[in-house]
Length: 158
Ligand SMILES: Cc1cc2nc3c(=O)[nH]c(=O)nc-3n(C[C@H](O)[C@H](O)[C@H](O)COP(=O)(O)O)c2cc1C
Image (cartoon, rainbow, N blue to C red; front, side):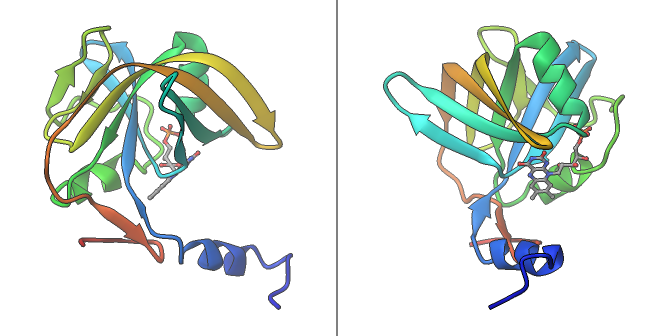
């Protein structure tokens, strides 16, 4: 067995779990859409449509979601690695360097992503240094296309 104190090994162990890559977007203004790369997301239920996102209390996105109570989720396609890399940096004021699409409720999502959700926060559960945000999906859309993959702490294609 690995040593439970070895956080690097634990991270490496979780690295065996292959996921897609999403961007959580919060609208600070129409000219400043904040983004955060995330794979800690989960479809809790389809009826009602509930999503869970797990966010560290250290992230800017954490407080933005608490303030705004709504956010977008975009599932990236295999050619959007640059977007994932950009939004995994700890910037507060990112310029809108990528193309966005406005959802019916006013939240922005990443253009050409393979799936988009517009979400309204309804419950927060604090677990040590993370908060689990539970949100209702108010609008969603998707298109065909290959997803960007996260495996062993690296971006991959299928
Ligand atoms: C593939 C990938 C997945 C990530 N998933 C999460 C996540 O689910 N929750 C989280 O809090 N941080 C996650 N991060 C880290 C954030 O993207 C990173 O800390 C980012 O700088 C946060 O931006 P912000 O502080 O401006 O909101 C992930 C990073 C990568 C590269």
